[in-house]
Image (cartoon, rainbow, N blue to C red; front, side, top):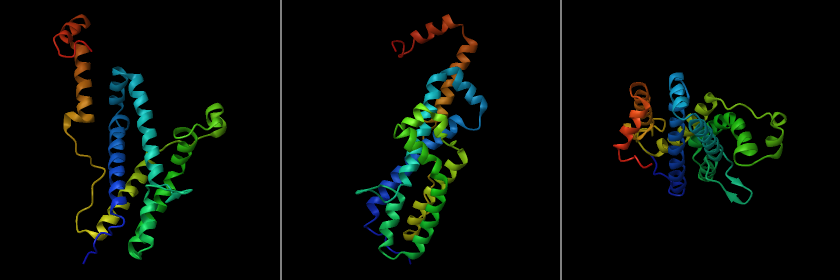
Length: 220
């Protein structure tokens, strides 16, 4: 028989759950736009190269920050952190031995992938390390690898699912399958960019302006 979910960690769990859902959503956007499809990269570059280049950097830095925050220590100085280790610390005092062993293994796996993320956060993203800005070759920041991000997120998702499964008979939360309306997410954006590319191919540029003048967006 399952135990009741410990009420002393429920608020922390709910907050972490929201953070992890957002992390998975941002990673899903990044993957759909920037990994695996060279033809899509061509479409983005032909549509708005500077914008989509900046968006790639912004999304990746946000993912670096999110993973780093979630894997932070339970405390930094006198301040408690909203982190996975904070949740495990809350369970440490209550004797949930089997669960704690699972979570400890998850944390080891997450930390093993996070060194490069922390270096970027501390030197470039969250702080502006002077040496990293003035003499970047000396700082030699590591490459951010897609496989490391995937592995870290997989274990972050697994950490929360391990906690939930320990107390409830519910199936795991499938964090890495974000359900969104087709036209309201990345597929919708790609569809619109493809339509714009088709318009460029089929319609004379002068006639395109006449078409735009007939839409509600003509004054933008």
